[in-house]
Amino acid sequence: MGIKKNFSAILFFISTSLLCQLSLKVRELNYDEFKEYVPDNDFVKSMESQYKGHIFEISLINNTKKTISLPLDTLSYALPYTEDIWRYYKGEDFRTDPDLFNVLGVHPFLFQKNKFIDKEFDMPYHLNIIPPPDAMEKNQSKTDRLTVIKQWKEKNKLPSNLYAVYNWYLLNNMVTINPKATIKYRIYFNPFLKRQNVFDYHEFYTQLDAEIPYGANFKIILNENLYKFLTKEDKLMYPDLFTGVVTSETLDILTNSNK
Image 1 (cartoon, helix red, strand yellow):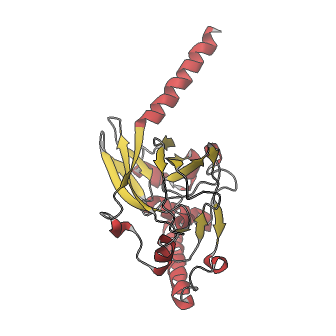
Image 2 (cartoon, rainbow, N blue to C red):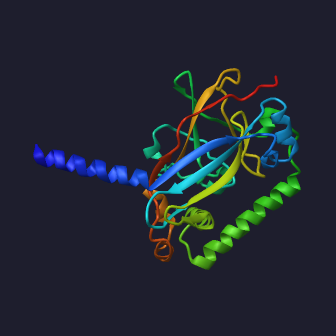
Image 3 (cartoon, rainbow, N blue to C red):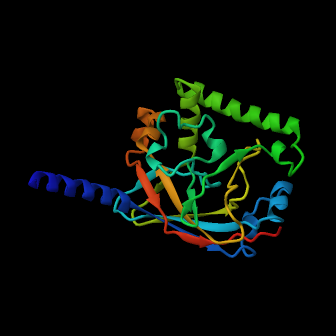
């Protein structure tokens, strides 16, 4: 019995230590004062006329006396596909285009009336919100992206396309936080329709009621399986990689509907 208690205590200490390495804080900024973070395109303007979005400041704090490195996509956020965070980056859960969905960004978990709000997925052609983008420009952007990833794969002698895109994405978004230091960045957040990228992938919450408040907590989810796409040389460059989940406090949010 004593051995079991001591073992449990050790596990609790290890888990607590990992969770205390980093802290995540999210606060809402004044929309009008930081309006430059709202994407300036017809699609977003159309959505903003229906549901006014939000500007959040994300702060990630290193609470330790050592440097910590982690991949963090600061361009946007990733919508969660499950509440079971231990399923992330396992088996078939690796998106083939992780950079297009900002999977290394913070994940906003939304709750309304004590119920987890799951996301939906669609394309703009089905939504009839805006006309399709210029096909030539879209195809060129797609070609440029694939060319960069192919060159990365060849240059670094990576074994597969999936390995190449994750390795490229991880390393190009790797940040190192000094001891007791904080990094901050800002994002535009609109849960009623998110335009992922120039290729027009969309994710959104159809079950969310815009007329009543909802709770949101943000998580950074970094399962150790994600790092299998790093080479030995990469890991030598970043020996202090963070593994685990960092969660912010819950924010009470109300998105104004203009319908």
